[in-house]
Image (cartoon, rainbow, N blue to C red; front, top):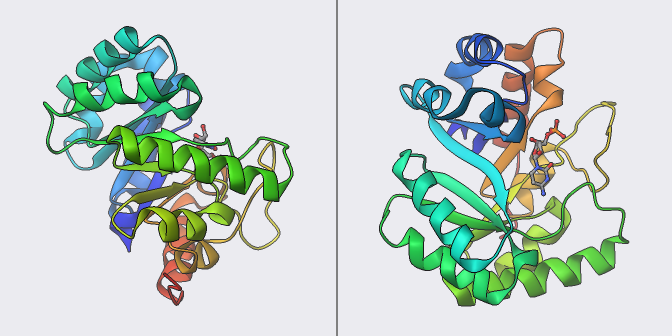
Length: 226
Ligand code: C5P
């Protein structure tokens, strides 16, 4: 299960990121590097994290097809294992991104469907996410970022090999903060999520390692439905 748990390194500089890596690193297989850290620290931090873990570079590219294709190539050259584009960029943009990713066989290119913080009603989010997932699959992407509430429908429509990566993970009485469509780690696994993205519940925990272990234990306890 630890290879299905991704910790979001949503911190402001390399020292905090590496400290967190050292604290929770043995409990997780992946670290997610997002906008804040990548803008501050760039490729050198990606290399440092890659020494011991897989990296999901979460920059959500959304631009004209040519620009996105070039960004995918640059990200692929960093040697990360996962990157994403925003499905809102449309079919042509997704196809250009997928074409650029072909040069990197170990790279999983996925699309963001509907942000887990989006306030749209759950049923509407499910239908938009499903439609965007099908579009991403047709364009040649390997999977999507979606909420746990859409994961089962996407797996049923796109097949079990089509990856679902789910942020918006909360358990116990944790604060949902800006997230809207949240679920706990066991529910995420049961819904068919391949990878769980967890940020603040681990980053802000009094004991981040214990929080990561707790998430893992809940994942282990789940009975997959898909
Ligand atoms: O702190 P929290 O667990 O809410 O962090 C979730 C992480 O997942 C953040 O880094 C956020 O940028 C990212 N994310 C998300 N929803 C998406 C895609 C990425 O919350 N649809």
